[in-house]
Image (tube, rainbow, N blue to C red; front, side):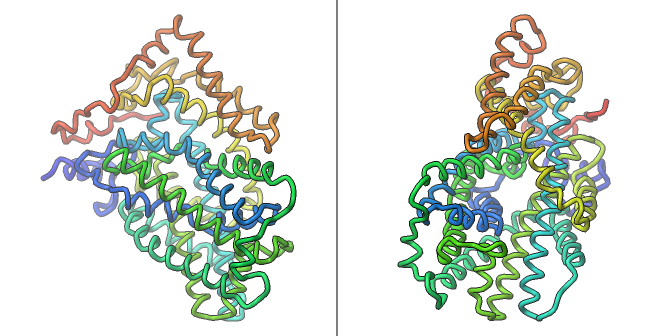
Length: 497
């Protein structure tokens, strides 16, 4: 029996999990299982990028006054800004084979990192509920066009949510398999949508008109900067889960290539489709109009195209929400070591399904997500300052699973210096206008404050000196040398102890 097979068997017994699902939660992934290449990472992230939400926002850029090509450039700039922190956080997975939330223990302390797990779980559950309802609205709209009758939004939401939960409970490899199919379908149908738009027999849809659409005559640079920062920094709320999808990756180079290529290609596709749809209307959208309604109109009532569009929407919701539940499940296992990934995912999935049936909670989604975004930005700034600048991409992974003897125990399990830097950065989001990139400014400000506080505190603090002692990059783990016990992969750490 291979060492990894023995570890998986022990994990299944320890957590009472089915044997045919992914067993690894917060545990490190053995080297022999890290075989994912760049094209699988590319497929996973491309599916995440190509979605109705990104297409809709791309159309909004045109309606705001940008020209077609300016909107394309803005989309690419936004993804480069957003992935600046995301790619850094993803290296934790490719280099150390652990989830992102486990790595937060090195920065915020063994106990202090619990706040990032709680925030990640809340964010993922709300995203799951919101995406389920949004997809259900799209599905209901297409079904109405097909059958000329209304369908229950609640039952559509529940049906979608259950399907998404099933795949997420199986784990990473089920996600990878679904990604390969969805990847091919999305690319092909994206081309179909482009052809439908270009050949729609109404004024304004011809490529010669749309590709020359110039938008408003003034303020384009300001608009581009505003949307690039506002849209791009929204990705900061996802930095804690970036490593989750990269810990099975063969190398950092494979991760960088697959992730960055998917980000740029996916954004270009969405910017082109969404921008083309709204530019064809001359940039004028009514209160009920969007890039998606334009796309539905271009089907001309064809049931074949409507069915294909329905599959497109279902696959999109499926892919995004499987990832949401997967990361939320890992957040639960990071908080409670006696809960396995399977059961953690099941628990948050049930809660997410309940939320997706509540219009009251979903209607307040924006308020909740704004509040979470205000916290995630300074968290990201402190993470980059600690991991990249102070530790130079180093991390002692075995110390992340120990208790009071850990170098990451700080003061009572909490790095209060990091917490203060985060707290100071939160009000910056409110003080700095959004057009000046408030989220980016607050992240940079918190990172700078953290570096200054560490410099002032380090000389008189054994806790900081011990935690920041230089670490060789990517140390060799004991289980890689033949120790196949489950305790070599994860110790019995309980966050509440």
